[in-house]
Image 1 (tube, rainbow, N blue to C red):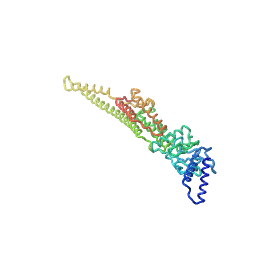
Image 2 (cartoon, rainbow, N blue to C red; image 1 turned 180 degrees about the horizontal axis):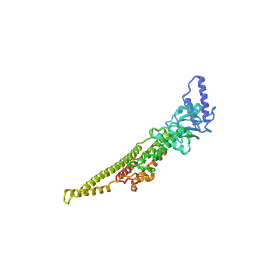
Image 3 (cartoon, rainbow, N blue to C red; image 1 turned 135 degrees about the vertical axis):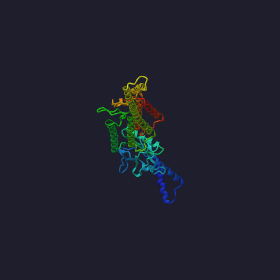
Image 4 (tube, one colour; image 1 turned 45 degrees about the vertical axis):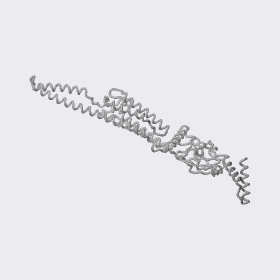
Length: 409
């Protein structure tokens, strides 16, 4: 009743002033302004209503029952018209609260005080770290709750107005989500089919075995394919959720570089070892053939003891023994090794399971799990520390170092 009394006094005084044609006294004007301010703030706006409607209006304004990212959310606000009449209250400075998180960068696209509603664009903004953190928290809450989140409106740097409103946020756009998921699944299927039917992920440094046998899988190439797929799939998922086109981080590029360098170096080492083994054995075989022919010629002449021919024959026989001994211990040329199954291929060499292979396979799997968890939880590529990348580099270097003396499969 106090507010009503002030309003009645103000009306009477205003009428008297208007009738007399004189300005209102200063104290009366101050009381009038105070009464008006008190009336404006006596009942602050709220988004408490039934069925998403603002009662008391000729035509109800309804809030979206469901809204997609990139769409527009209509928020009916009770008392917005009265609140907006105060000089200190600017409805264009109102901001949207979703799941308890204020979105300060989303300015209203339409403010209708007379109809008591505001429109907000649901455009994800992740240019700055604080923006990304707010949206990640909001989207995570929406995923946990099945998309149903609380809606509120309030002034910046202040608590939101009282609200009991909820909206279903569709975080996965139907058509785009189907397209992206189809692309991710198709890429995985294509990669698996290529790996099985071709030699793209197999060790091609040796001769190809006869069908139905296949070449063994290469650990270095499998690791390259593993990080390639994870990076592409994660990039597409982050873009689907946040529309962020610059989600790749320096540490991810470093990790890809380590895997690519490991795979390339492994191929070079394998081919170099194979070529060196073939060359060494070819040279020794040529040398042995020449010695055997010379020994045969000298023996056919039956040289007498102590003659130059007899001495040469003895020397050639000694050289032949040395060459044959070298050939015996020369690096073997792998004879068309065959696959023993995916897991056994990547963790074993010619002597069986090797720890350096097992080590790099385990670390790759562990970092892959961390990678997927970070992408899903933070909607961002992980930022691995220099220590962790260094550990991965050491594992890769150890693997390459052991490949030089490694027995071919």
